[in-house]
Every structure is written in C-alpha cells, then in structure tokens.
Image (cartoon, rainbow, N blue to C red; front, side, top):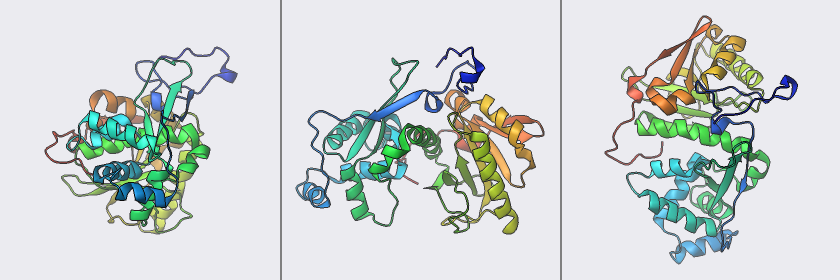
Length: 327
C-alpha cells in the first residue's frame, strides 16, 4: 500500500518499497492489532470444561481438525485456513466453525490495521485460544502449541511474521513440495545454536533438500539479526563437515531461504551481509514476486554483487486432487 514518506530522515520509518512503490501489509512498520472478542463470548478455561464440551458433542472431530491445523500453523489468517481445508470444507463452513469456536475461546481472532490506511481490511489472523490450547495439549501432549498467554508479550510483530511465513508454507503445501515442516527446529540437537524460524523438507526431481527459512522484518534490526544467525550456522556447517544437521530431519543438502517482503530489502541485505561469501547455499524468496508471479518464480541467488532471479518449476501450484494435508 502506498505510504507518504516523512521528509525528516531522522524520524522516517525504514520503509523498503515494492516495485510498485508500496509497503507489503505483513511487513508494515505501522501495523497495530489486538484480540477482538465476539459477541456472546463465553470462554472455557479449564480442561474439565473443555472435555465436557467434547463429550457432549458441542465440538466434534471437524472442530478438532481445525484446531490442530491452526495449532500447527501457530498463527495464520482466515484465507490461509480456508486454503488448508479447501478439499474438505467450503470457505463458509470454515468461517462458521471459527465463529463457533471463538465464542468458547477455542480460537482467538486478531484485528489488524495499518495506521496510515485504516480502510484496508485483510483476512483476520487467528491463534489458539485457551480452550483450544488445553484440548490440544491434552490429546497431543508431545507436540508444541503456542500458549495463548504468550501473545500478550509477543504482540503484533510476531503475528506479522507468522502470517507471512505461513503464506510461504501454504504455497509449498499447495505445490505438494513439502514432505515435512517444523517451526523453530533444533540444529545439531543444540539449544544454544540459533534456530531457523521454520524448516521444510522439500521434494525435488533431483532429490530432497532442507529449506531453513527465516523472515526479516522492517521493524527490527534485520541486518544484525541475519548476520548473527548466518555466521552462527557457518560455524556449525564447518564443524559438521559441510552439513547443517536438523533434529528430526534427514541429512539433505541445506538451503537457507531468506523470505524477504521486497526485492529492495533483499538487495540491502546482500549488500551489507555479502551472502555469496557463506559456504552453504543462501537464496531469497521475495514476497512481492511470489504474490504477483507465484512461488516458483520468486527466488533469487546472490551472484557477486547482484541478485540473479531463477525459476523452480517443481514449486508451481498444482490443481488439488487430494487433501492439502499438514506437513
């Protein structure tokens, strides 16, 4: 969306515009948001009450399926949830289920806007509510689900990042290219090593590879953030004989994916971090190109001082002949 730049550079937001002169919504420094409670809100807050609702069939297996997909996504918007269920439920069925689940605090909806454009209304982000969290932790205790209380401290910045990366994840699934996915996966079983935001095992015609995905945001020190991670991983890569071993993943060729919102951000990152000097593969996936041309045409590799665009044909979106699933 167009933004009127401030004239005083000392107080100007660090906008990095798209080719159309816009700032992508899910990377806008002036976004704000908050949990938006429904009418007739009757939250359920104990595991006994949650299990009672399930026993009395107030919630059913389809509701649990929606909660599990949302829990696995951590935070995604309503459009993404509809796409995850496109072969099982209609868009209106998903929306009706979410409305029902909101009233009992199984899920929570966020209202998000940009201060310079209050009229634009994006698909609403959703996260697990306290009832949904308690239900999933009861039945899937070995899995990670975000505690709803954490969103009070994580705030809008985390909502932005997870919705943005879920778009990347959703498109990988639509292309049937991701055989598995994990948020914040451990590298070398070591909690001291910096974690990628997401890891995906990608099926390619030439064999599987591991994508280590991270998301720089304009409202953070993204140059320092990436430098720290990439140099940390460089030490691991050299120590383990040109490998980045990821817990619960096969030892495939590692490829770091920097999922940047604009090509201008990618150019600045490459200029300051010199990505072609790292011993492992580093690619950009550019959100603005993904939105316009598709995931397969959104990739760039660093070549000396430039970024070279290329196509990954195996990431073309496929017509759905079976459930999208949940890697």
